[in-house]
Length: 68
Image (cartoon, rainbow, N blue to C red; front, side, top):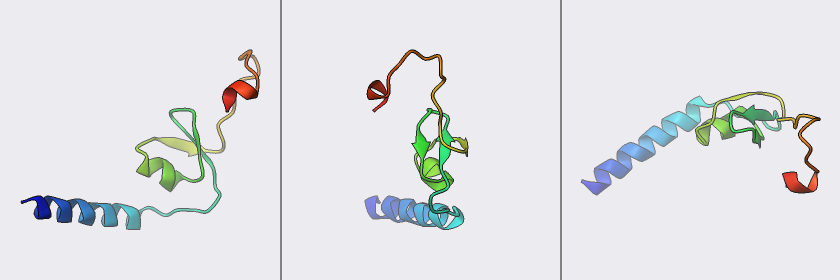
């Protein structure tokens, strides 16, 4: 039974990864405000995304040090 579940999971993963077209170095901003290297990496992480790097509002009152 465990082997069947593992086989189904691996099949799903292979299908998902093969259907996702990864574009190298095309940053996207995830709904969690984290920048991902591309839309595929964001999707694998389970995060919706939009094209472009995430930006920090200029009025946030934070420093670059606190963002790391």
